[in-house]
Amino acid sequence: MSGFADHLARLFAEGHKAPIPDLLSDAAFARDGRRTPAAVLIAVTDVADNPQVILTQRPNTMRDHPGQVAFPGGKIDPGEDAITAALREAEEELALPPAAVRVIGASDDYVTGTGFIVTPVVGVVPPGLELVPSPSEVAAIFEAPLAMLLDRRQWRSNEVFWRGANRSYLEMEYQGFRIWGVTAAILANLARRIALEKLHDVA
Image 1 (cartoon, helix red, strand yellow):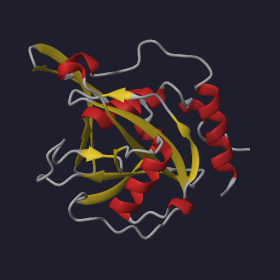
Image 2 (spheres, one colour):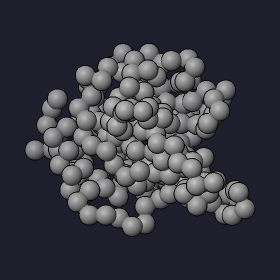
Image 3 (cartoon, helix red, strand yellow):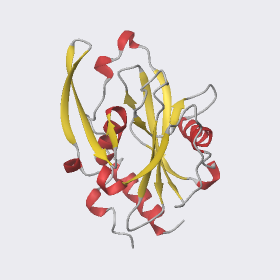
Image 4 (cartoon, one colour):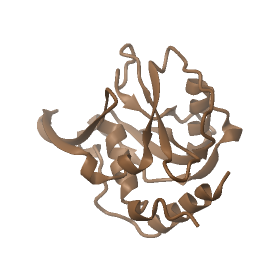
């Protein structure tokens, strides 16, 4: 790994030194109080001048969040922690070798309206990995610039009436993909932790 991974690790650590009380969450919309632990991998390519984030589109046949843009991830199995689960799911969905990931750390949990408590795990991976989508879980794979995803000015705010209340959400169109919902909210929270203005200041 290049100096970019070390730089991102420093930014990540700096941004997580203090709690942030008003991070985005859909906990108010989750029914019956149940929480299913899950984890996702935010895989960032090791390219200092323009790091990318690996994203997927879920098949329309999936029960949870069909057709949505997502990070590779899923439920945390018994005996696993969030990092182990995120790496396992990325390997199952994309054939992304766990050994190729330099884990930076686990960020803030996000509670979805469907009752999952999702831990985002940030990791740095070599560019140009030969990823192979699992057809049952991944309809498409694409990359989007990390700097764009962390830039609040790039996101549109919208609102929808859902489960008896108005729900605000963020969205963005990128190369024909609509990034919104849980994925957008996780990225917005991460943007509160990683200083965008320092992203390219690699020594």
